[in-house]
Length: 626
Image (cartoon, rainbow, N blue to C red; front, side, top):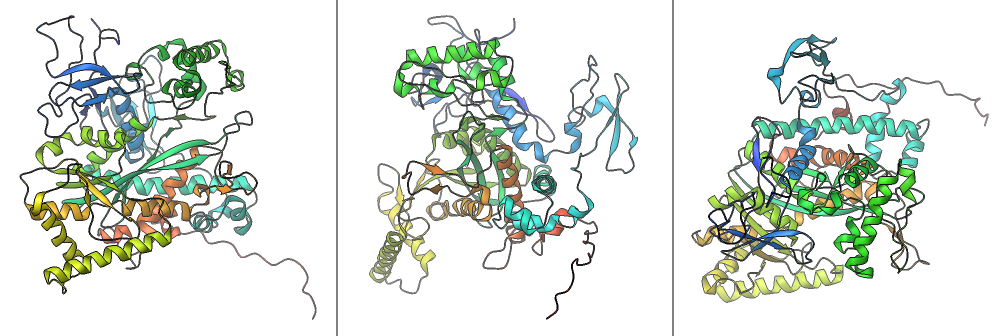
């Protein structure tokens, strides 16, 4: 008997492969470190009602705080967590890590009805045989062993005019230094905006090749990272202009970034947007399958924001109309998708529940991924990168976001149980003005000087004084009841910083604990987010119009196509890791020993190739006599 959502208690374990062997994903377990049930999965199949032998002794079914989605509650620690679709997390892992896969993972037999149809060459090499190559060995040909059809593995490069090839490096430098599209077209003397986007696609492909080569080397162990790493992870909100002339409102997207605190090397950077799916097709199929009547974890497209999800979740409509009216509005949206034949049929759809029109959100291209699934996919990819690169000890610093904390507990549960991964929460006054930051910095410095005079430690530097302050605090009586420790070393970037160790191990030495507390910071990832807005005009903050007040903003340089956000971030990742130097004159890749000099724009676009040189053109026009 096949297990269906009706017979399942929680979703089953899903298997996923990035490179090499497959690994399982099961996130429906206790997420409280130190609990006896931590990491132990819940029972998937439903048992008999009432007391029985096959009942789950560890967990019981419950619901989230809003009562909208099911959750599991640990019977030992009473911890509660939302139930997630493991299949959806596996899909998200494959989407995020797709850039690091070789080309063989993207090609498969295309003969409909063949036993190998859709089975990629990289994952099923035993089903294909090599059959030579086309022109160069970089374009191999494989033959399906079932239908004998040949499959050419070739990277489809965007065609660039010979004149634009010599201008690509100039365009790259302008994009990476905050030049808007129109100014780039005019400054680089391109023919029109179509040439700009063609060159941008070429630049993006080259950057993805460089990022993918390094990530692939980490996954396979060809490149090694330090045995102990301190990584900061956080999310950033990015805005996209309205998807159509009918829905004139901005769309919020989020990016997740993991940065090495010692070198500022970006290990992973992704966006909650999947461009491979058509929004109308997904919503139409969900309406046909009655997916919206099921709980999120048991849907086919559990990781996507479907039409009506915003109203049901209480983010917008439910606050104004109540749960019953919201459910009725969601039902009307699903009926409209069942009856529609194209996107235009539902683009002007308005639901009037009684308190004004509500237009549900739908992108023109691609699907938005829910934050919880995006963060889980990011964490699992990061775990595989660190595992392949030989990292043995990990300190992960994060913000107070429940999805980030839960994702860390799920992805790194084995390392946490072994004491090899430590999670720290960091909070500080993010909206503090610059004058207040200076005052708080001077106040913290006075406290450190007073501590040094009282203990006769005037000869120590800031780091040594901070070490002594934390050690004495831990020896005196440990941490306060709320668990937050005030960081003693002041920084203007993080005023009033406090840290909390969420995976504390009492058996550790005091000196090791002090080093972990001192290393907790989000400064590196905040610096990376700041540089994305300073280097890329498309991701700059909005303009506040004087007549519109503080509630009406205009995203003057924001793109209209959501695919552009991922392209700009992939380009920025290369600029940050291999081009941008700090005060020490080194790039993050140089600090880790992966490079001996900063890369130039032409080095990224033409690696090992002859750099195109623009032809000399005669100057037209008659000379003006003096």
